[in-house]
Structure formats: C-alpha cells, structure tokens
Length: 236
Image (cartoon, rainbow, N blue to C red; front, side, top):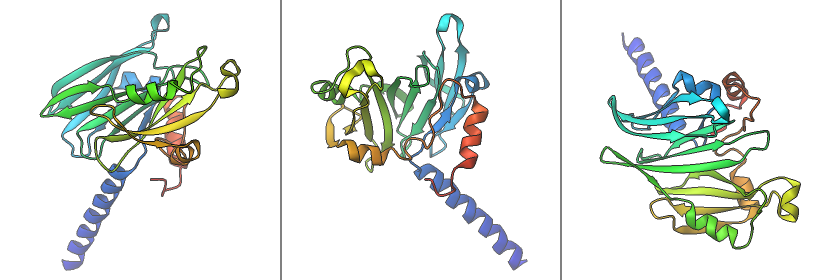
C-alpha cells in the first residue's frame, strides 16, 4: 500500500513540476487562422481566467475574429480582431493579471502587431503598452514605405513589465535600415520605458522567446503541432 501511495505522490509531483515549468516558460501559445474556428483556449496560470479565440471570417480579405476573456463561464470582455493572416501568439503574465496578443498580418514576411491587456478584479482593460517605445524608436528609425514590426518577447520579473522588440520591415524599400531591430523593457500599465536593449541583446532574447518557430501564411495548425513536437524538451 505504501509503495502505491509513494507512486501516486510521485506522479502528482511530476505533474506539478511540469505545470510550473510550463507556466514559467517564456514561450507563447501559437495558433494559425485555421485553428480559430475551433475555439482554442488559453488558461491563465492560476486557472481563473480563459482566453478563447473564435468567429474567424476571411471574406474580402478581412481575416478577422474575436478574442473573449471569461471567468467561470462568465464573459468579462470581448475584442474584435482583424488581419489574422499567419501566426497568432498569446501569453499570460505569470501572475494572471495581464496577457498579450501578437499576430502576423500576412505573407511570408508579415507585419507583426501587439495588443496588451490587464485583468483586475474581474475586469479587462486594453493598455497602450508600446506607444512610448514606438515613439522613441521612430525618432531614429522609420520606414515610411512599410512601417515596422512590433513583437512581444517575454514577461519580465515584475509581472506587469514586458520586453518588446521593434523592427524595421525586412524589405529593400526600407533601404539601409531594413531589418534593424532593438528592444525595450516597458511598464505595460503606463508604457514607461524601463530599459533599452541593443540589437545584439534583443536578438539573443528572441532566440526562443516568444516562440521557437514563426508560422507564415502557408502554415496550418497541424504544422504548429509538428513544430512543437520537434522542439527539444528543455526549450523553456
């Protein structure tokens, strides 16, 4: 009987350790547009809140849908989405009080966008987390023809602090600046810049965060699952 009990406790400890490791991972949940009609769900680390994607529609190249936040089956907020052409990334903050949504609006190169949300006392509020970082970036680096990519990289030690990357679009019409990238640690509550990251620093941070793979418009969710399965087990 004792051996059975020890085995059961060992299984519970293994499951707990796996759950903690998954929650501490810097990597986001990754979806492609064909998964959205199946209503994929991303639970907060504390299990209290659920993010659900749905409502996908691609008529007239709209490529939209919705993101819904619920608590115990009660809808707290719903937001419209558009231009979901390739990778869709969702990641909760470790304390379950914020999350980000990042998506690629099309093509093999894409253009990445970022939205950040705070959850407090059963209410959800979208925050302008990157406005000051983008303004700082654009003072020195800007591509009028294409604009730029904005990435969430990872949540930092303080739960509401987020590391983001800003990048000039990687095409020739952006001239010598094409592909230039830098990073910012921001306070998502007010957008304040807490630290600037050099090109080398932010590239190092992005080797595995927010994802070890980046779907383009040709990918389906089955390709995402295959890419996940092929990742080394310690890529957290």
